[in-house]
Length: 329
Image 1 (cartoon, rainbow, N blue to C red):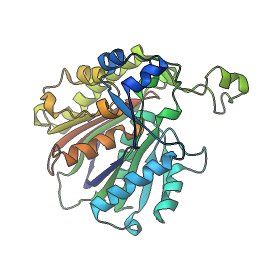
Image 2 (tube, rainbow, N blue to C red):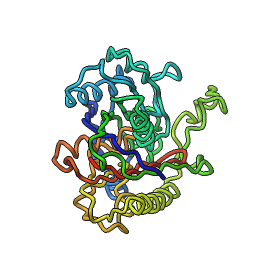
Image 3 (cartoon, rainbow, N blue to C red):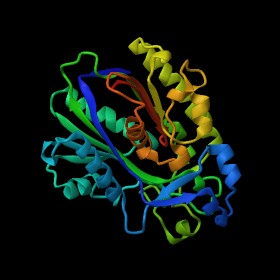
């Protein structure tokens, strides 16, 4: 648990690929459209083109964010990219983004899967709070279509491709600004519930492993569901309690857009109007690290979040890892 004062999200930006893949499109693969809607709430998702990589999605979101902020690339002190689908194992996707932007700031990747953006947000905020940086670009981006097996009818329909970005700046003039309370955590004992088995140093991607689909994401959906609901309930209540804020005071709640049933279950115990819980997974599916910044950008543009509002964010996913934060926008 902690607090990071004097940090402001001064701008947001996002990008989704042009190709829309509907549930009906997936019927050709044997997926049941009605089952997808009933069990997940997802109607469509976006898919990157064959010539796009994660850094391309990052670039588009970053450019839109910087344009909204009205600052030049030279003013960026640090670039953090939260992704589990990097362009290459090395160099980092953040360095690819830095090069394409024409920036000179240090750049690094951070991998906490669906919780990655929250980890990136907390990390970037710390650099500003210590006075070492004044302007940090945090991008969450994933091309999840590359990680899921088309033959897995339960998992394949869940995911999409996207990128979202926020610009963090110093806001020392306001004593009540920034991250009023936050919590990041992990339960590594549950790592096998969301895992890509092969392709790393533990298990190389041999022809045999590739033939058996070990390069794809494997998910224990039932247990992940139970864990996600529990971890949000516990962390949200602890974060709100530490800040002395009642859930009824929240202007907007943005959870990782994994599944409508998870979101509904997760907020059922909070005393918050459901109209204040922002949801866009019906259009984009689960975009992993891009999920929260994409939703934030849409919520801001829709007038759901305004300066001075209290906003609760929570990301959760593979690791198992999570991050929850209460922000004074």
